[in-house]
Length: 330
Image (cartoon, rainbow, N blue to C red; front, side, top):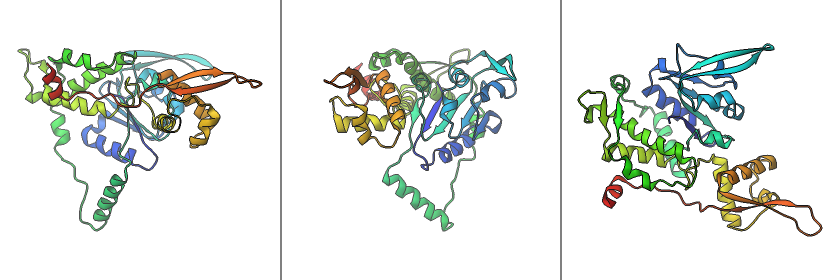
């Protein structure tokens, strides 16, 4: 559940934010940071005995790596996995033990749909207001008037936490509010429950424990709200299928320029000129597979058959009810 793709434009500060957050909450021994990796990095790199309990942070990871089979396995499977590879002309088996939490940044991520299912996407604030706020702080810091301050007791405090089993007494109240129209819900709903559990474990000293002290119960007002806010930031579509920034932009342009009317690639090219025609076709097919577009084939008189697309899904976002709204309905 704890993979994340930070997908924003180049120069926005993805790696500055990610690096500073992680180094202040993750012990150095548990953080594996790489600026450049090859597709088979996970097959050959094994920290200590296992990946369990580790965080892998990859800066600006290439699409070749994102869509690699070994990386796909690492992003989804825990336990012990064996990969069969060819090295120097000889077949070998490599054992990968455990699964890290994977956090990656990319400005131009073009992931296969099966990989997008494994990586909720998050974007930074790219607004004019945020630009102004950043410049204001940069100017103030240049005068010697301020420094970036971090609570120095964060890591020691987090190091006191221990693993706990978490019960969610209100889990059955949540389920009816999640859409069941796409199979991805089988992955996304457990992720939402895991976010609740994560909040409960972080606040474990404030949670009611069972007699054995190994289990605690989640709190709706804090843990549910924590999960709701985090989860809402990664929602791209009503059916909870995540989209990359490029796919979001293509969807929005299609909605504004064509509405529900059919269009061909040649029509879309005039409006969507920030990617190649090959990439445009690829993303149109991906949006069709996700269920946002409908694809058809037409054959005008005296012309060859051609493919056309039409916007299928309303682009309004699914909203998770607040704790007050959830309990008020009960």
